[in-house]
Structures are given as C-alpha cells and as structure tokens.
Amino acid sequence: MKLEIRSAARCDLAEISAYIARDNPLRASSFARDLSDKIRMVADRPLSFPARDEWQTGARSAVHGKYHIVFRVEEKRVIVLRILHAARNLPDIV
Image (tube, rainbow, N blue to C red; front, side, top):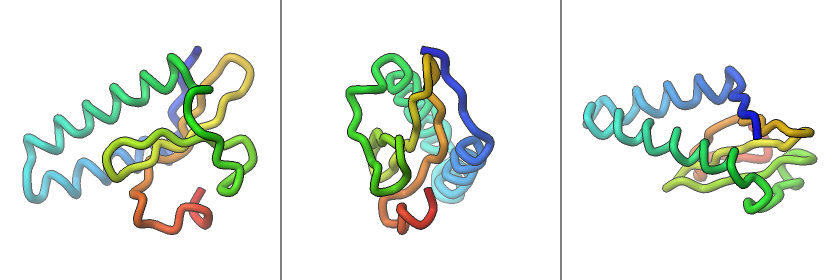
C-alpha cells in the first residue's frame, strides 16, 4: 500500500529523537530508524494491527516499545497520523 506520513507524525518522530538524543545520540538515530522500519511494516500489512475506534473512527495502532504508531487505512493508502508515547492520554490527542 502507498504510505503517507502526516506532518504531525513527522514532528512526533523529530521530538522523540530529540528527547532521546539528550542522553544518547546514537540511540536516538537507531530508534528513529527502528520506528521507520515499523512504519514500513505497517504499510505492508495494515489490517493486521488492532482497530482503535475508541481513539478515532477508523484509527489503528501498531506498538513499538512504549510508542503507538496511530494510522488509518483509506482506499489503498496507509496514513500515519501520530507517533505517541503510551503514557499520554491518547484518546484526547489522536
């Protein structure tokens, strides 16, 4: 499927990387790469991840460590909406 990453998700990834880089710049790079790999996996098989309609109608979520990759499937596209830490109040953010 075609992959679209919304600007909010790109900002989330940049903020996550910056936060990790404060303590460990090498890990920040590898974690961002790992998240990107997971996003590509989501695009390959999006319907294998659980629906999260309680967050937003049509939303799905893939977990990577303590982060949720929140996305929707529309026609032949996977749209990544946000990448959020699980400790946040996800229904209010998504």
